[in-house]
Image (cartoon, rainbow, N blue to C red; front, side, top):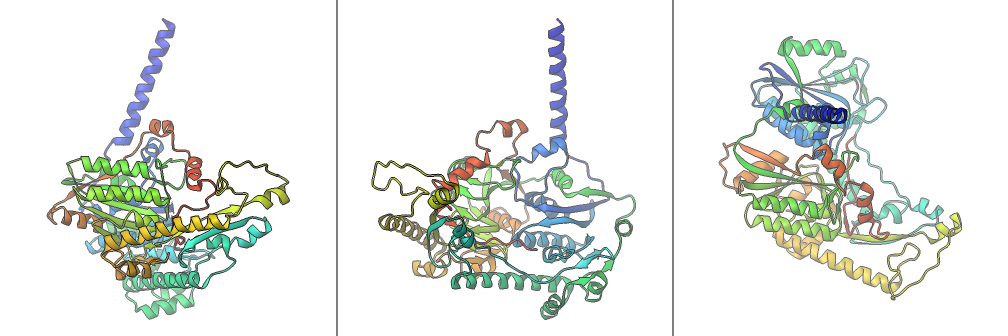
Amino acid sequence: MKTFRFLLVLFLIIVAILSVTAWLMFRTPAISSNSVLVLDLQGDIPEHMPTSGIEAMFGEERLTMNTLNTALHYARSDKRVHGLLLRFKGVSMGFAKAQELRTLIREISESGKWTAAYLDTIGEFSPGNGLYYLASACDSITVNPLGDVNLIGLHAEVPFLRGTLDKLKIEPDMDHIREYKTAMNTFTEKEFTEAHREMMESLIQDIYGQMVEDIADARTLEPEVVRDIIDGGPYSAEEALEKKLIDRTMYWDEMKKWVDEQAGEDADWVSVPTYASSVSQKGDRIAVVYGMGAIHTGESSTSPFQSSPTMGSDSVAKLFRQVRKDDSIKAVVFRVDSPGGSAVASEIIRREVVLTKESKPVVVSMSDVAGSGGYWVSMSADSIIADPGTITGSIGVVVGKMNTRKFWGDLIGVTFGEVNAGKNADMYSSLHNFTEEQKAIRTKFMEDIYARFVKEVSTSRGLTEERVNEIGRGRVWTGQQALDLNLIDEIGGLWTAVEKAKELADIPEDKTVKLVVYPREKSFLEVLAHKDNDFAKVLTQLKQGDLVYGPVWCPVQFTIQ
């Protein structure tokens, strides 16, 4: 009886804990009629965290672009929200994400609500371009009196490891198609090639121009004036005030009083994640399928215990099959944030896009990066939307391996005995370079992949293969450049893609829709039980017998600082 009572009490305690946890995870918070929306930006902002329900067990969920898109889009027309306070605790995000976030903030301003940014400093002896660029979307910018404004222009650094590999007696044996496919240059070169430098200068100048134009528009200054201001930076808070880069200097306690004056002392301060969880969406259902990270065969890795998710072809294909079979889903927005990876996995996903198009529209929304394999999975959609600063294109191939024999033998003292059965059995061994015959085989495979890539882009985008080869060759483009080259259809963020999906699905423009996000959130027990959430397994799949990269990979990613 004592054992029975103990087990019964334990069972009741577990049920109570699970009930409270479920209530905390799925309750809809109440938002008062006099609220200030508070956006605290800190750390990396991922696109979507399908395991975010876990955080709800212990506190506020992690901020994602999905959360930001939901909260800021609906806040602009919500009468309960009087204004937006943007605070920075250090943030790192790609330029395209920053552009999308700026658009959402400015839409709140245009709806008649006040928006304000507060920063202790905009870079303290460090670049503050990204912080200022985001803050400039607000009606007003306030900085601590001792703060700085480090708006100093963009600087890109590309590491080259060939010298290090030489010292370690590791020999890279790699090849690419074509000259702008520079992912391997990190390992094979000691400085920029002519094509690599040309591409990087084109990208950074285009992104810099976009940043200048956006700041000039937000601060009511001429672009040339902004360029001169940037060239004269950095500035103290008082100097930035004189240059009209900021609107006031205040300590945080003074800023809180300022907010109270705008919204009233009785106003509730509501965090963006809390507000997003209170949003009720109604109308026709549109699926938002997220494809994030390196592309590989097998299942995606979305563990909350790792910083970077991956895009597994099996997982993403399954999501597309689910939305195809769901008659309540009227259209699909495929949100892509990926530098590429396996060509085979990319083609598996592209095929699912094509099959889905037969029954409902598919619109791609590109985030920071949709290059190489990221463009491969996107190219066959009904429409492709990207931000001006999205990194895309990179139509090319790179394959190779590292010969580590001398590293093991000369530096470590490890030697290997080898036995082969088959002429090319050691083709992918890290103890040998490719033979000339093996290089010819490798080149044939690469050329076949590139030809298929070019052909599919030609068919999907209505371009001749000759034109695709001209703008392909492994070259990376910004979203704005890609629009001019007809690689994408329109400039905009997730909600632009949603509006396009509504149009293609014949949903009236004035009708609201319900976004159904895939992959769904997983419970804590599901995450722990999942067999493929070990990131090391995914890296093993990507490595594939000492291959340094998958066949298609975008070599450029920008984080604005």
